[in-house]
Image (cartoon, rainbow, N blue to C red; front, side, top):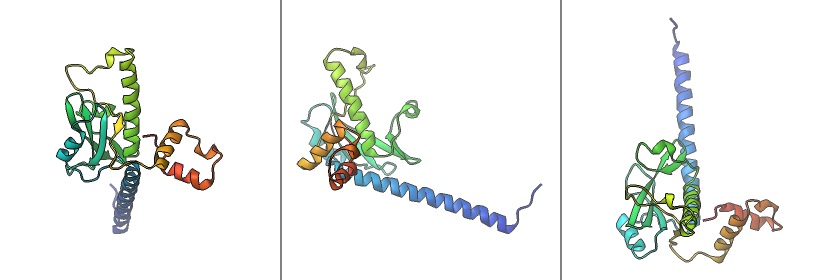
Length: 200
């Protein structure tokens, strides 16, 4: 049997508090960075309601999407997207420093996790574009979802306003290369390119 002095108990409590505050700082930093990245996209709509998102997407083609704040308290963000069955909403979960799509309990462990919301969206956009290319060329009929479920595609963002030519150029350059530092460009321009290193 061991006895703890009041000092050692206090030390343990202090260490626990330090760890908890580091986690909070880490979460605040990650969410802050996620917000900064989202605001740079042009397709983050902020506090849009589900009905407003539905109106925006109503006449859009399948795969058109936007990201907005979630109206549910347990979630930070929601992807609103047009599917073959109409507009739908998919919540983004934040847990233990990572973002992932909310889903059925059985599928959750299989879903990829990401450091940022934009990285998550970028992944699913690339996946959707690959899927839709394969389907349009007739290469893969097995990609059709089973049991009459609706396939979610993210292919075309809805911008809050027309994006600047600089931003569109940055996306095109990031799409073409991940070696921005190797490009023969002024440092200021390299900084602009790396400030938003996504290709969506």
